[in-house]
Length: 518
Ligand code: XMP
Image (cartoon, rainbow, N blue to C red; front, top):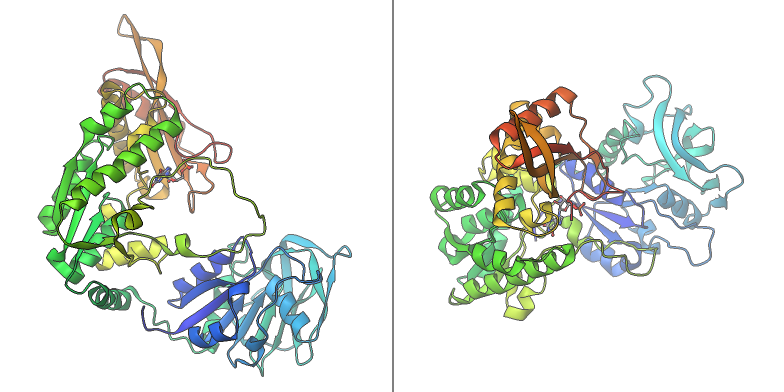
């Protein structure tokens, strides 16, 4: 969609391929990840990369039929950087040798020392005579390909860094994209500079080009957008609004499972500040009615997901002539990853989305964030003038408070939960901890316990507090609050929220727990 220099990452299935893309985007270099089996000569020609990176991967190049880079790459005339598996296949394909095992596997921290000659991609390395890197390989290169030289070695990887600078082929055995290779970002920076990248991937440019593309795609037709108030849907809506103004109508479905004051804030922000066509669909009675007496987590999720689609469709049908549905799909959702595990994975939770809607309603999709990672969406939000407090908000799940209220949902419980959550978040903000935490929230537990307040007996609800750090929500660690903080928060919740007499702090990481309680 957009015009800028492009780098191609050929994916061989490494767990950390996305991190390569992150490092490059941080350098304002536009890149895309494509699986090795989709990259052929024609693809290379049409993608027209200015450089190519070969990722790591779990296979062994010594295995018959294992993945290879397309042969055309070697005569394509652009710089190539091979990482781990990418290094090994580069060596093998160009006439070197890779061997399996023989006690030279290396996992974890290692130190690379330079050989006599310097290499441009290692500029700024070896201040202490060596450099820490992260290794994760079973195979190793035993003979380098003709034309290559060694520029760095480690005890178990004599060919840790090799290159043929004349052809601009570079190969490293370690993973420069992970944080455990502290100067890894510098290696990528050196590589993209020598490949002639000028850092032309900026949010200002993206905004301009995305607006032009939306105008071209939509023409004078109408677009509808499900606005949740989360960062992705908010940025999508504002970007499209900036492109086509009143041709956009947003539908904010209020399922009665939002946090304290949330619906009012979202409506005020978009209607009053942005003057955006916004339908506030207050359907809380419908949702809460259908959820009455339901305590099974998957049933709750299915009811909410199904109703959401019905309600959205009902309002959307009222918007005459709508031909497009806007969605805040992000790049990680569209990366076609190489799966070596086969078989379908287990469903832990049915996530809430509007997946099947476009076909059902005969709508075309507008997805202006498809090329962006989450932090780029935030940067774009800043560029579009969204307030910092909105951009930095913790993620909030589609099913809302329903999954923070294990067991049956009642209006009384939701009320208590909202108030406890508001006090907890206020505490976190007051202590300046909000931005250090990925997600923090209160839950109301499905039990009452006995307590004593003043001279009287109480029999009230227990509230669970959760706070985690995470990079992508896939794994998470508990946030290490001090006892003082937890004590103060407990006191405030019990004093300020009627109906609570006990507070727990959830110390479960993910895995084995999940972030939400259901
Ligand atoms: P779990 O609980 O699966 O959550 O560890 C991981 C992240 O996903 C969010 N989450 C959801 N987000 N729809 C969403 O949009 C959902 O149905 C949903 N369920 C969980 C959760 O808040 C956390 O950030």
